[in-house]
Length: 120
View (tube, rainbow, N blue to C red):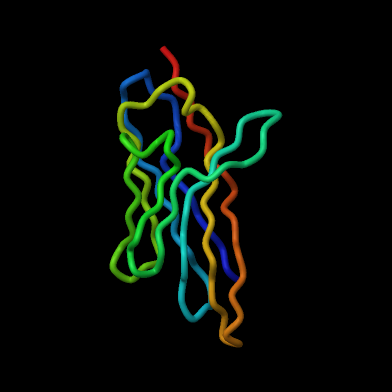
């Protein structure tokens, strides 16, 4: 069974920084694309940043200048460094991973979500 474990959310003042971490555990062959999404009440979940298995990143234009996504060498952990945080970055952040199982199929998995609140 594949699980995604997230950590790193919290309360921070405007202009501050947080780092989110997400690790894939369980039985699988490899992890493909990983990414972070966020959702606020009454709105659809939106992409924040994703990174391929080869390390190529994509950012939402709204975070491109102050968020950085990265992966560790085995590729099972994805980090999101969030700098210069703004109140509009407040949301529940969800980790996503496309995981290849032993039968070669690839399925998406989601973390439980972590709250990020930017407020003075």
